Image 1 (cartoon, rainbow, N blue to C red):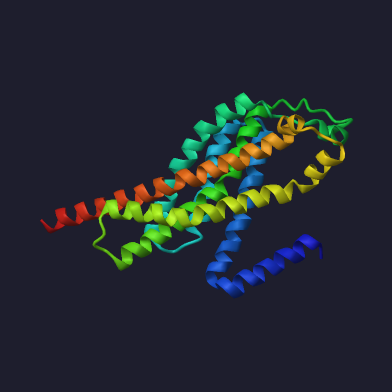
Image 2 (cartoon, rainbow, N blue to C red; image 1 turned 60 degrees about the vertical axis):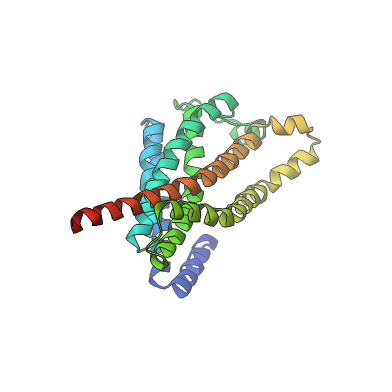
Length: 258
């Protein structure tokens, strides 16, 4: 048994013990998401338009993550609609940012690993970088949308007379509590994953200007900053979607009563 297989089995056992049926569904969603990511890589390798593959894969991953993570329909639908809006906004942001940053391709630190290999694979590396950045933000978007939506659904359950405006402000209040922890999670994930690169920078005496202009560092930093932006705008968008759905339900109920 390999180490990865062993850790995967440990993760499965713990998720089932702690989460029960929901834990099993969450584990299954991880496997499905990995499969779709792998499928997206294959499609791009066969020269399908990377942006179209990204949008399709992003929507599918968000649907799997959200709808397999919660059974309450109000919570999941609200989170999914909000996530789609945030995904569209981030795509419009990421494309020009990656174009201006020009961090596609490989950095000098990759030269030794690529020596003897051809990088003329017939794929636009800028589009690949856009795809990577978009897909890396999906987890943070889905997590924030689910947290806000679940909190507002509970508020609505305890206070069904709440208006859409009140729900919106409640969502912003919930968002204030999760933004800080989400930011720390993203930041320390970035720092931990690139600790070896930071040691490389220090050991080789990189100047500050060299570090902030390094392709690998800037590319990863853009991913983290875009994820930050995604989490921030997810809070008001999810709150607004829930408030609009609440108002629509009230209007529909009044029409039926009449």
